[in-house]
Image 1 (cartoon, helix red, strand yellow):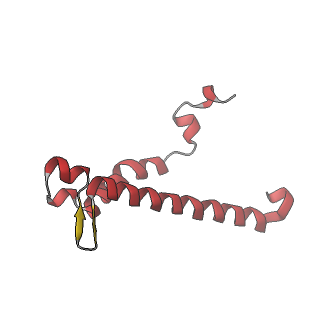
Image 2: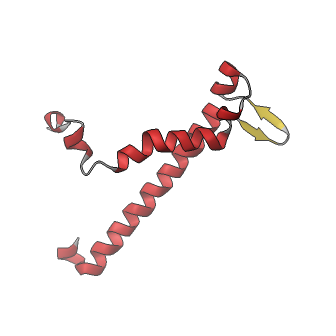
Length: 94
């Protein structure tokens, strides 16, 4: 990108990839929150998986579920410089 459009083009590409990745992360967090913790909409409670398994407790509320998911799944993924090398996926590349 930098060869074709210069430094500004490279920075714009990096910013657009960053914004796209953040948007996808937000969508995943919404889906995880709805499925695991359930949802309250229009006064109706739609029970999530944790509500169905364990009943309503303090630790299966949406905020706590998303916090634990972020700390245990998404935060470690940000530590990888290259996921392909970490997960040993280069053997599958054709």
